[in-house]
Image 1 (tube, rainbow, N blue to C red):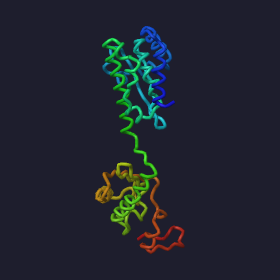
Image 2 (cartoon, one colour):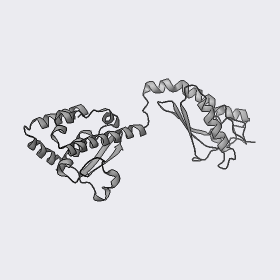
Image 3 (tube, one colour):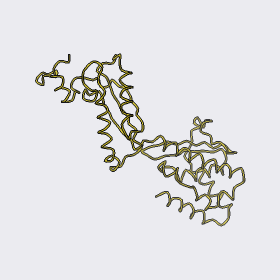
Image 4 (cartoon, rainbow, N blue to C red):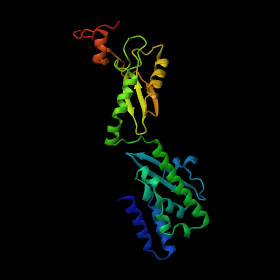
Length: 261
């Protein structure tokens, strides 16, 4: 069921009741249906600020969707938070963050609550939206096929920039030397690099990494660059490109790919 369909279903369910006393009874039943919330997880950090009653809410992102758990020590408030998470739990953070929660006004919930409960409802909505917005900001940008195609020239330019940076001990650029383990460019054209060195104790590591960052940042279109250093797997001569082997005059018939000197 889509988000729009779920909201419409809620509106229709509430329209079945003529009196708000009956609608309150329905909210109470929704609250009773909430999954149990472990007592040890009812911490101060999970309390929704601005609610007169205590309301605990947390969320978990799984497979690109945001799932909520909640509880309250007040029966009507528990029904309200139950109603909200029944609509929004299992939706993508983008869906939740972009929604106006307008169905709440359609069913007349806010106008039929006491002022303190109405304020609590607003706090619940704001908290759910904030959690969704935070999840969106933390999620990596998803690249479409069109995005990937559009970024190919930028990848080529970044590789050219990396080939301008040389290893301090071996006269080969770091790209052909095989020191770049991963090169990624996100939708915002930020470059992330996972790289290594030929030896863990390279005394020039910081200088080379700084040179890599500055070289990449100078590429037109690049908006930022982050570099992570790793020594897993450990670099060996098999990672050299064909161009590097030719440049170093290595003997291809030798099992150990020749000697670096």
